[in-house]
Amino acid sequence: MNLLPRLFDASSGSVRIDDVDVRELHPDLLWGHIGLVPQKPYLFSGTVRSNLLYGKPDATEEELWRALSIAQAQDFVEEMEGGLDAPISQGGTNVSGGQRQRLAIARALVKQPELYIFDDSFSSLDTATDARLRQALKRHTSGATMVIIAQRVSSIADAEQILVLDDGRLVGRGTHEELLETSETYREIVSSQLAAEEAA
Image 1 (spheres, helix red, strand yellow):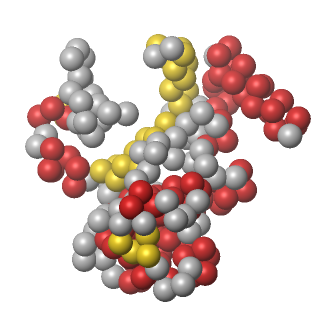
Image 2 (cartoon, rainbow, N blue to C red; image 1 turned 45 degrees about the horizontal axis):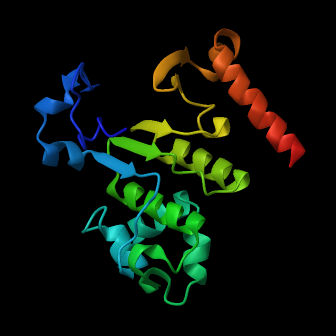
């Protein structure tokens, strides 16, 4: 995940976007086309509005609400005193983990980038919110590329291409259906998660 936005450069091999090595792209140019939601999203001291505007400083109020709606954050922001101008403490400590994740996702959506990177960004969401969010993302970001790093199979089951890693090694590649047939590791992950859901 760190290689794609050039947080680190590859020491061997290469990471390519549209067949261009990312090391050949200026970081400002690269970051201008990427919306990154890290595993532990960070919110800055200010307001809901100021945090969303980090994604796109000239965004309209309509664009902010649209992003919040897609991110399944509109309802709780509307309930906050002040709405878009509700205060956010440093690190987002005055909102829940799930709310923090959804606000970080909305911030990336405001930017409307060509490439989204979601690094386990749905882990604090309940399964119903996760499902609604993924459906909304599919409808509203169809022209963009999405890279989703996830431990929850339901978060990536609809992906065009799934890469299965085991201890950092690539052990499977394909669609959900293909991997169920070809990857023992993937089948084990799916089975263990289904068993956990049934036990809950």
